[in-house]
Length: 367
Image (cartoon, rainbow, N blue to C red; front, side, top):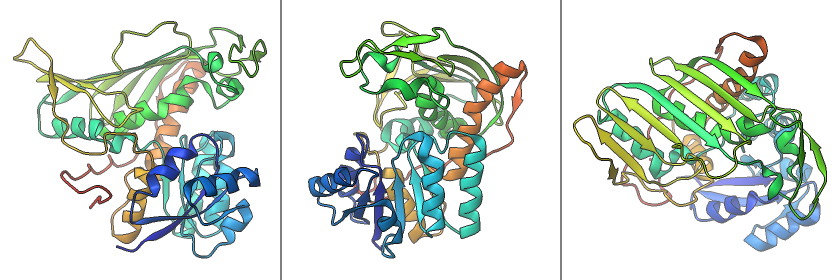
């Protein structure tokens, strides 16, 4: 197995778990990290034992680095991904793939032009929780999937996040913040989406920040904060999905449920890697917690990068790939477009349902 040299661009809060996890994988060597704030890049390099903290241009010019992890803010995802690809390096980007569909298409096109791979978070669906659900569905425990529900119901981030403004700007909101986790999980279990109908609203035109750093400042809301809709999957199942920043208190709704002809599956939080996974069969009156069939049940962010490394060393496509990332991006836009245009939106993209993870493999081995 050839070890792949990896660089990281973007040394903010989310980068810590990537640094921590990637150094556990023998097939990955994090050789450099970069940030617009050079001192922050150097500090991260020292903290995690990375050989070099440097500028973005220096990292991209390093001929030893084959794959770059893009952990910049969403508004910068497209520009940085294109710079990485132009430099002749494979790219794995935090969710979402891009803010606009046009930007997402440009990333996919540039990768094909250069003969490079694109990977896109989230990679939580590769964890033991959702992989167990995939196996249960494939093994027929709930029969033929006929429906699904997905609910992300929460209070907005202005009460805790130090800089919450971008959550309420274009390209933000609950759908673009958390939708990638839920939609990626649904596609990994049920396959690609055929069409979507959505309704959206901005419930409060202004939000008051109550976190300490900017306490009392007012945010003008530019994107829907309550998004509800219906999805039809190519496989025939029909799903209902709501994402909201307008809910006070803990919602009692499930994160995700899959309904089949022979039973119902309660899917764990798609923003996590573990369980619990609950099953209720048609011939039972009780829910049963199912043992997890796969590993990676802790916070394993970065496993999508490792999967790209395996794809580079083998002949298969990476599971958290660019086509999946773009399909999810288009679906998120479809909810908003459907509401704005008062019509169903038929998806123009599709993707392969990601190949399930093998069972019983040692840590750090994916094939």
